[in-house]
Structure formats: structure tokens, C-alpha cells
Length: 153
Image (tube, rainbow, N blue to C red; front, side, top):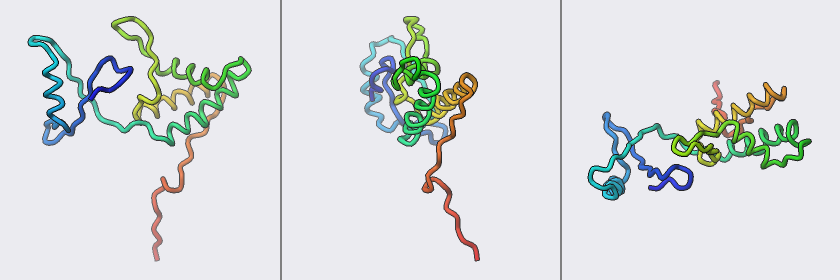
């Protein structure tokens, strides 16, 4: 299961831990992938906790609240458009240096999971507060997100 563009040619296999062992969702894909290596060729296996990809409401909060507020306060008068402001925030908080090339890579927000995206939004809001004196309100929970209250007699 190739992870697609921007992951350094990594192939991702999903599974579940049970009884201290990792069980692949589709073991035959992993077995077939292993056959692509030459005898004696080294490889690396990295395990990390699985988190869902960022949600549509999270994405809407970023594009509908955070970026417009920072754009209006800080960059609009400089002639920047919305995309310039978004890219500046990504460059500030989602950049990493590729150790192989020394080049700076900026992650796409669509590649972030819910935890990473939450941290990115927090970083943007904190930056706006410190550097612009701008308060960006937290996302508003919809009624459906609230726990249901039960009546007591």
C-alpha cells in the first residue's frame, strides 16, 4: 500500500496489535513487498500509532477561521492572497529539512492526522496571539457533538 506522493517512497501496511503481537491487515501484500528486495539488502520497519486523518470540520476551521483572520490582520495589506498566507503558516510550522538532500520540505495539511492537524492549528493560533495580538476563537462544537443529556424525574 504505497502512501503516495511526499512520503519518501515509503510503503505503508496497516494492522492491529493483539496479545503483544502485530497482525497485518493484509499479510500477502507485505510478503509480496518483501520479495522486491534483493538478498542482503537492508530495510527499516517503523511502527507508529494510527490516528485518523484530519476531519472536514477541522479543515473547515483552519480554512474558514484561522487563515482568514491572520490574512486580514497581518498579510492582506502586504498584497498577499489567502494562499500566500496559508503557505506562510505551513512553511513556519510544517517544514522539515530532508537529511538526504538538505532541502526544506513543507508538509501538506492533507497528509496530517487529527493529532498533527490539531497541533498545527494550535501553533498558528499561538503565533497569531504572540505576534499579532490576535485572539482566534476555538472551533464551535455542533450540538450533535455534545453529549446527550438525559432527563431525571
